[in-house]
Length: 75
Length: 260
Image (cartoon, rainbow over all chains, first blue to last red; front, side, top):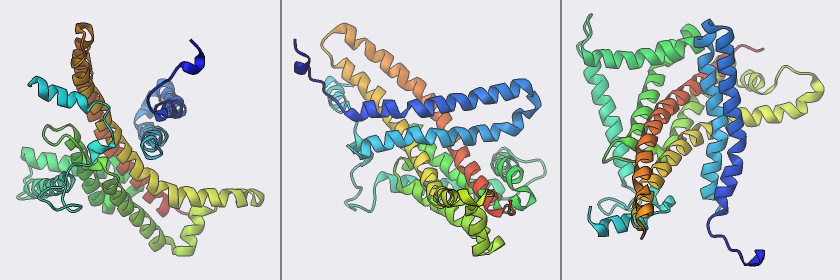
């Protein structure tokens, strides 16, 4: 069977979204890793930094969500 | 469920954007869909709840009063005061309203018979973001005056030769990206959450419609995953309501901050 005979069905947006999710995935991982590290080094800072964890998480996660939304917009 | 009903659900399987556009109600095309009704229900429920909770307050609060007070107390002591200091108390009513409205409308996406949140349509988050945008710009301009406010927001403390690069970036991020991300974040979370639940619920029916028992039995796994993801969705709902309010408060804080 030639490679040219192989046909794949489906939307290319799915692959695009997979690629788009790499960056935010790494970013969210870094944010929570840093929070765990900070809390392990200085447990009493946990309450202070918690808010910034969620803000940072939301800001980074927005990129992945743009990916989902635009996957449907630019068909 | 009859087999024809399951077949009908299975035929819906790759869920599309069409799912988010339910038919108009009572023939009022473009005016009344179930999202309109949901938003009205949310407003009504919140008004009744807070009126009932704050009516006839007692020193030892009743359960209802305690619930109302803890929502307001969370917005004031958990978000407004830590971010904005004593000035933040006057924004606490707005934060409490925003938080409870977003929380309730988001919650509709996992409540049976509602099943979808109005926030899964971009129009609702856009309006909420516009309100926050107007508020943080208004308080900033009222405190500093237009010129000084824009200057504080846009001109960072940096060497002069890098400013031509930084000023457009700062302007773009403060006045354009902020409202867009605020609304798109809430919208896309609700949109994606609904989509994921649809994929696994309808996917279960699609698998059930297969013609081999070992594929049909996977449908149980698909539905089980739908239940697990409903709990994840509950977490996202709470988180997005919180994040929206926290970001609003941090934008207000940035607008009120003295020149750095």
